[in-house]
Image (cartoon, rainbow, N blue to C red; front, side, top):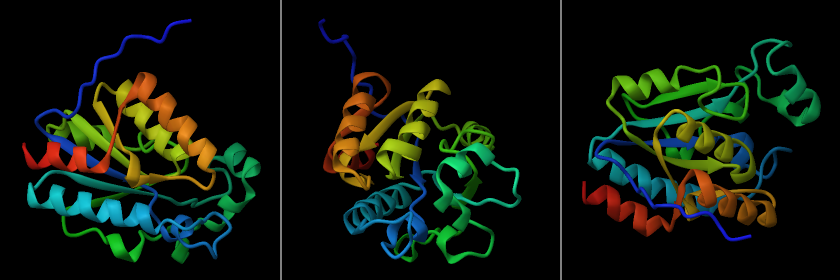
Length: 198
């Protein structure tokens, strides 16, 4: 079977950066949910510098469970998620990527940054036409957010070096799938160049 024809879309005139779950629980290997993610953090620091210099919108997401009923099936399937409670250091954005004034941290309970949050409304209110989706993990919350980005009619770009996964095979397979139908998967330097040229 031949592959589907697809057209690279890149970024629009007003992209936003969505840093998905680059929180201590996922970047600290001491947490059962975490893994070594120094390269991903560094790639996101470079993206943040460029987006901030261009005064483009930046959003972070974290996962926080406030009561026993939120995402109950998901939490039963992945018991380590029970660590992500209000006040826990694991739900805090990694200290190397601290949000600045005007950059919102959106709490979510499921995989996608769009699902049961106001992310889409926030992006629309800022005139955003495309999103750069980064973070952890490629096979989980990054993929779900990227797919939902497309389903909300945003052009989606995923920078390879700015996403990561505990499992390298899952990482590569999901990048392949995202590029096949849902997003432009690009090298970090390509994405930085696109943003600089806006």
